[in-house]
Image 1 (tube, rainbow, N blue to C red):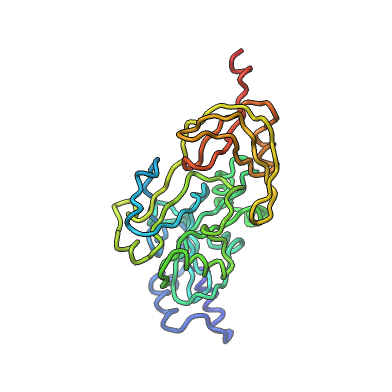
Image 2 (image 1 turned 180 degrees about the horizontal axis):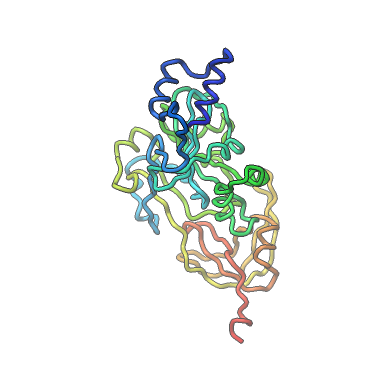
Amino acid sequence: MHHFLEKASAMYYSGNPILSDEEFDALVAKYRYEEVGYQVTDGIPHMYRMYSLQKVFNLNDIDFSTAPMVRTPKLDGTAVSLQYVNGHIAQALTRGDGQLGRDITLKMEEIVPNIIGIKGEIQITGEVVAPDMIPNARNFAAGSLNLKDPSEFRSRAQTLKFVAYDIQGAKYERLTEAMDHLARNGFEVITHFDASAFPTDGEVFRVDNYEVFYKLGYTAHHPRGAFALKEQKDGVITELLDVVWQVGKSGVVSPVAILRPVEVGDALVSRATLHNIEYIRSLDLEIGCSVEVIRSGEIIPRIVRRVDIEKNSS
């Protein structure tokens, strides 16, 4: 916020104010901007608390009778909040403990829209992710936000994506409506995001209507209107018989594994996503090898590793 207030002050004196006098004074008082040498970079409060999600491992554990829900992938990256004031990015924080985070504003300015068409003071929350083709993609994303060298971060910025999954402080009837509006303002949004090439950790089911969502309230840790359906952790071993290529709805060509049919959970699985050629190479897959298969969120078959049966048995 300190960086934003310096920018707002400079634009005021240049004759192009982005805040009214009253808005500027209120932010100065709130963030103690005028105190000499005062600039906190850690332990900064989020505009709205970032709650964790209640974890479930079976679809039957979710009450779908409450209200229509939105089903999205649960990205496995680093959660971040963005604060915008009158359409200008003012502050970006790591999740931290959900109430206090660390300032990463200058980094996030490299990968998110700096100016958007939404007035007032709002908070956009989302996930910073790196693609699966990068080894330890989750750690790569988190580590990038911890870099102290700005030039090193800029070299990684094109690899990272911020995917928005909520907005607070603005008036929308539904989450899907809010995400559509953010998409029109230049954001990647979870309701439209193709997560096939990015690490995921299950799926999220969330009440779409904001009024119903807020009426359901919160526990000490979780909103009652959203759930994280976690991945099945125990995989099943089978044989990779072939790899075929298919064209998706968006026109993207991607590889699909043809497997010796095997039961994973309560489903017979004979095909699994392979994301892209880099993912195949990273797992060192070849026709005839043994692989471990899981169902992400107990739904989408996915190969997680190659298993050398002969080496393990010798």
